[in-house]
Every structure is written in structure tokens, then in C-alpha cells.
Image 1 (tube, rainbow, N blue to C red):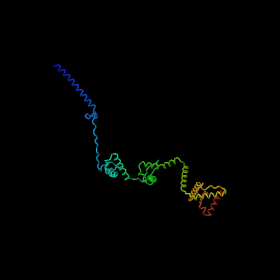
Image 2 (cartoon, rainbow, N blue to C red):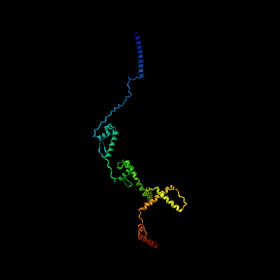
Image 3 (spheres, one colour):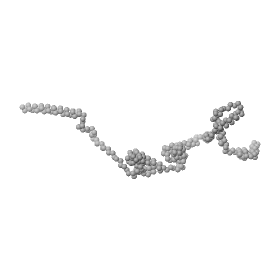
Image 4 (spheres, rainbow, N blue to C red):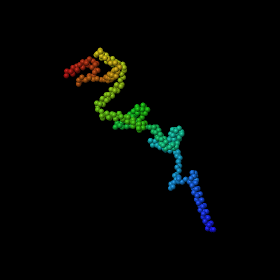
Length: 301
């Protein structure tokens, strides 16, 4: 009887164990298949063997007092913060009053603006006799640079020293050109060529300064017409309008010769021992007689 009870107990225990195992399995599967995992702990963010990253704490920039030195001018004088605050307040119409509230880049911009304003206010120009550049050994003086600057800017800028470095270099290059041309001409052009060039330049300048009226050209045309008809009454006279350019050039040449001869002083040398001026010859008969005698003597030799 006892053996039979023991056998029934083992069978019951096996059945209960089987049922319990199936229930645990179903429970785990149910938990794994659920979408809601609020009850689970996420360990993905925990790094094994790593230290946790420290939190970044933003520091609030402290405003410095107005007496704080924030930089220096070109002459070494310190720049105080109160000067920058005053400039910022004016530039922003009172919206910003403290330099330390600006980012670093903008603080540097304010500092540069203050330096430029200080330089302009305390600017000192050099003497007009100061040498501002040397081109191939030839000095360029500030007076020449100022004069050229005034000319090219229409009088708006008159002081070479007020230009920045790049602008000064451009101006000096322009001033150097005639010096370089002159040096090149002295080395590569003969005396005769120079004289021809200067002569041509003078002629062009004189021609440009002489005014020719329609009356001048018409008077020359009539004179030529009369002369041609005297020589040949049957001559074909060109129309006045077709001779405009040639008539104008001839009038210019006549006026140029008149200007050249206006104040000329001519002295005629008749022999090696005596010199007479043309005005003296025309003044008296005695001079004329003397001239004839001198010519006779010269011819007899």
C-alpha cells in the first residue's frame, strides 16, 4: 500500500512540474513579445568601462569696470573700456552700452574703429620738403605728391600722408612713370632724336594754341585765287569748301611764323671786324652807304 502511494506522489509531482514549466515559458514569451517595454531597464546608454561625460556649465561673462584697459593706440596710449562703451552706445543708439556683452569678434572690430578714429584725430602731416619715395636714385618730394593727388582727385584730397599704404604705392607708381621715361630716353635716344621729338611737341602745342577763323581762311583763299587767275585767267579754281583743311593748316603756319618773328632780334655779320644790326641799317642813309661800302670791300677781296 505504501509503495502504491509513493508511486502516485511521484506521478503527481511530475505533472505539476510540467504544468509550472509551461506557464513560466508562456509568461517570458509574453513579456518579450510586448511592445510596451516601460518596465524594462535600458542599459544601452551605459558604457562599460567609460566615465560619464561631465555636464558643460556655461559661464556668464563678468562685466569689467570702465577703467579697465582693453588695448592700446599706435602711439602706446592705453584704450579704456569706458571709451569703447561710449562708442558702442552711440553706434547702436543706446541699444548696447557694455563692450563685454559683445562676442570676441565684435569687440575686436570696436577696438580697430577706436584706433582709426584716434589716428585721424591726432594725425600729423610731414613737411612738403619731405622725401616720400626714391625712384632709381631720384627723390620724389611730398610737395609733388600732394600736387598730383590734388589734381587726380579734383581737389577732394590734398595730403599724401592721409592715404593708406596701398593708395600711396599706386600714387608713387604714377609719379614714377615720367622719371622712368626720362631715364630711358636719356639712355636710348640720341641728341638729334630728342631735338626732333621736342620740336614736334612744340609744333603741336603751338598749333593747338592758334585760333583760325573762317575770315582768315577765306582771305587766304581769295589771295590764292587772285594769284592763280593772274598767272592763268583760264585756271580752274577749286571750291572753297574743298580746301578747308589745307587752308587752315597754311593759316596756322603763317601765324606761327608771325609769332616767331614778332620779337626776333636779327644781327647781320658782314665781315670779321664789324657787326651791324638790321635796325641800324634801316634807320639812316649813312648806314646804308656804309653797308654798300662794306659789301664792295668784301666783294673786291
